[in-house]
Image (cartoon, rainbow, N blue to C red; front, top):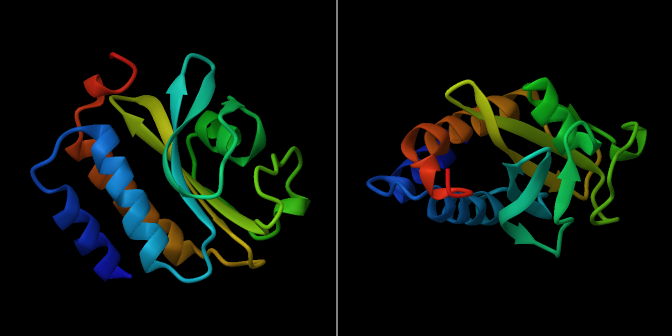
Length: 153
């Protein structure tokens, strides 16, 4: 898994556009991990998360803060691992094939700017080790990207 962190670091090295970096990171994760059916980013837009770069099937476009796993992770500012999405109150089913999920909030200058979201068709797919790796990936994109390029900010 440390190979993933090295790969992401090398792919985004020297590039500061947040959208470009998120697009390549979604691709690296989607094509490098087993048992994954969706990887992507949602970006804060007012009181909502709006779909950003991703790999996988068509996804929900807008998610309210505090709604579903993504909105809950953004609001709580903490990584959330859901072993069984059917057991998560208020889960939003964008793809009925997804059975487990992990969402990592992205914080820049003490503001939530988005989330990194990964789904799996397998129950219990994500671990604390996965969380640490995805948080390291999140840190690379947050610290290495120019967030002025997102939403005109």
